[in-house]
Image (cartoon, rainbow, N blue to C red):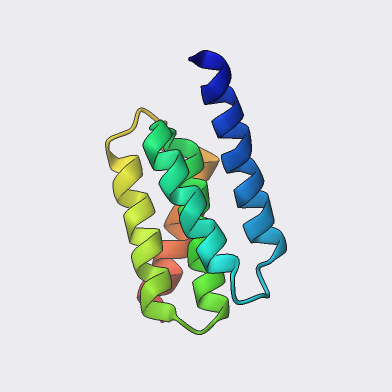
Length: 104
């Protein structure tokens, strides 16, 4: 049902926003992991990748560098099979995050 899919997507976007707002709190990572799962189930790669990028930032803020790097590498893998142009801002953002994690 298209209506329910739109409502589910709206809920998932809300979960992303909530996770970003709660970035300094302990449950931010859990909220962002939920949004990753929701967008994965919707096969919405751009929002799944955004959620994974923010998840990595939340984990890095909690000094969980290895988990952050894995979230960013996972996001890059999701994009590998997508039709998103190589010059897209989303790919560039993830590339910078992943490169920063590799340097750390």
